Image (cartoon, rainbow, N blue to C red):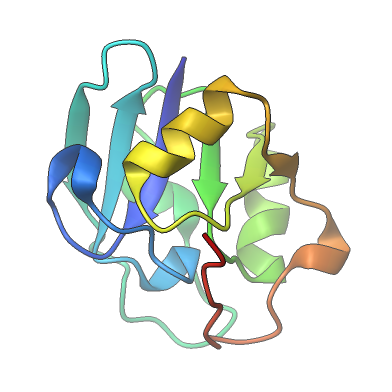
Length: 125
């Protein structure tokens, strides 16, 4: 399975998950079987609230789902309209998140789980 995870830095499997999808410095494409990582710079990182264009940077990439620490309603709606599954993680690193994916521990995002702004979320694990 190939997943996309918004991250704060490009440290491969040790990268930390960004607390808010649209504010991530990078998007990391991760093969959950081989742990191979491909980093994509988020050129849409600095945008006004509600103006996130999640597919602008990721349009040419192929992946099975996105795993986020947090995401706004606008971006969530755009991804869901494109039939992209979005999952919620509370884990701090890609490694921990991949382990959770493999063990089916992540919940698919629903509208009531979306952020109302560019706030901060704490990772619990």
